[in-house]
Length: 137
Image 1 (cartoon, rainbow, N blue to C red):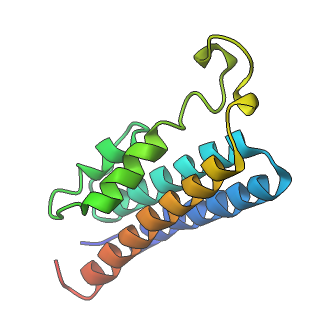
Image 2: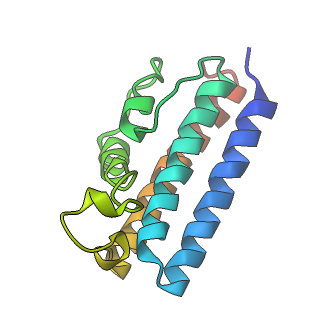
């Protein structure tokens, strides 16, 4: 049985995180835009998992996708997830880098791409949910 309320709670958080990432991009806070894009995708995948009664834990978007057992993950979605996984730690922690600070390493292009990757993951998650809601199991 699907839990639409739980799915929508997580998806709403995902979309708010993505909107926040866009604001960071506009302000030039590129490392934070990358991190929030990762978070948006993570929240969306967890939302689907919670919605189908299969919550999973962890922060790797690509590993979380593997918990969606009834679906074949498109290569493009998995590539986006793996790219986003790389933004979980080094975007925030200075000790992830040999020197300097995270904000010195991320560019407008990085942030723009991260947001696009998150959009692709979220769009795919939404399409899966809609199919499940219509009974397409």
